[in-house]
Amino acid sequence: MKAFAAVIALAIGAMSGVGTAAQVEVPSPNRKLDVWYVPTPNEIVDRMLDVANVTALDVVYDLGCGDGRIVIAAAKKYGTRGVGVDLDPARIREAQANAKKAGVENLVTFKVGDMFKTDLHEATVVTLYLLPELNRRLKPKLFAELRPGARVVSHDWDMGRDWPADEEIKLGTSGIYMWKMPPHVDRPMPKQPE
Image (cartoon, rainbow, N blue to C red):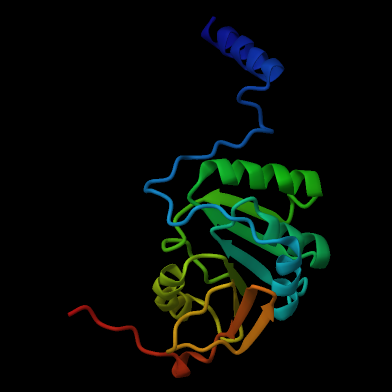
């Protein structure tokens, strides 16, 4: 009888759209958001991907992905796999819906997560539209986890004087900064806690 009740509950849930496979359970963030959501304009997204020389062989990670537009654009234009990470479950739901609408849900993944705890070893391109202090806090993680030749592209904010961009583009009031990860032996040693 319990099995029959479970089947009925599943059928009712499926008819009402609740708990179906089409919906993805999105967990809540474990801490407050680092930044408020401001979408990167589409023309800036295109230039960021161009500056990074994205190809179908890349894996693009967008930290603080918002509505997913950067990894979705990379998937549509280049057939690139992508991962978007954001602390805001509402943004992740929006990104998942946008990927489905764009027909690239098989190439991109979105997850609620902390960018400082996200494993970046797979990434060949990392995109950012954060605040300067967050970019600087990410530097040790980028140096520790990204392979030589991986590219980091930031909309509007640099990484500080100690890591000048390899390429910088001004587009009106916006800026794009791109860094290529050097060989491991040429990377700064992380500072030890005092």
